[in-house]
Length: 225
Ligand SMILES: *Cc1c(COP(=O)(O)O)cnc(C)c1O
Image 1 (cartoon, protein in one colour):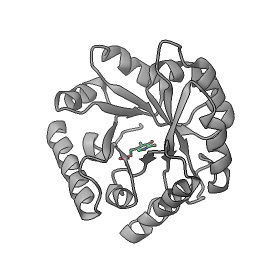
Image 2: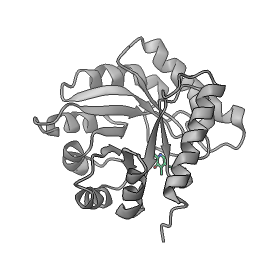
Image 3: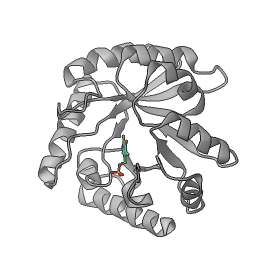
C-alpha cells in the first residue's frame, strides 16, 4: 500500500517537473510521517524513501530510536519552542521551521561538534493568514544575514505553508512571490524551497519547489483523536 502510494507520488512529481520545465530529479520528496507509526516509516524506507519529516519532538525521538538501524535523513518541520532546541539540534539533519533569531542562535550553540552544520530553512508566513508561524517577507533579508553568520548552521532556504486554496493559479501566487523575494537576495547558498504538500504539490513545483513535504497522499489521513 505505502510502496504503491510512494510510486504514485513520485509519478506526480516527475510529471510536474516535466510540465513546468523543471530539471528531472530536482524535486526531493520529504515523507511527512507525523502521527504515523514507525512501521509505516519502515515500509516507505523498504520502498526506497530516505527523507522523513516530523513535527512533534517526543514522538519523533521515539521513532528515531526504533529505527536506529535505518539510514534516514530526518527533517524537523514543526513549531519549535526554545526549550526543545537541544534535542532538535542533536537528532535532526534539517530544520524547516526556524522563524526566530533566538531559535537559530540556540540551534547553533547546541549543534554537536561531531555533526556537520545543521541545514536550516526559514519559515516565511507568505499569505499573512491566521497562522502565526513564520517571519514576514519584509524580515527575510535581515534574518538571512543573521542566520548565515552562525557557523554551526547552514542556511539553505525557505519553507512556506500558504493558506489552503483549491484553485491552481491561486495556489501558485504565494510561492511565486516568495521565490522572487529569495532570488532578489542574490545569495547563491539559498538553494532550497520547501514548498508544497499533498494538496498543492504541482503548484509548488511550478513555482520552484525543491522539497515537497507529503503526508496524507503517502500515509493516509492523520488521526489526532
Ligand atoms: C503535516 C505537514 C505536512 C504534510 O501535509 P499533507 O497535507 O498531509 O501532505 C507538510 N508540511 C508541514 C509543515 C506539516 O506540518
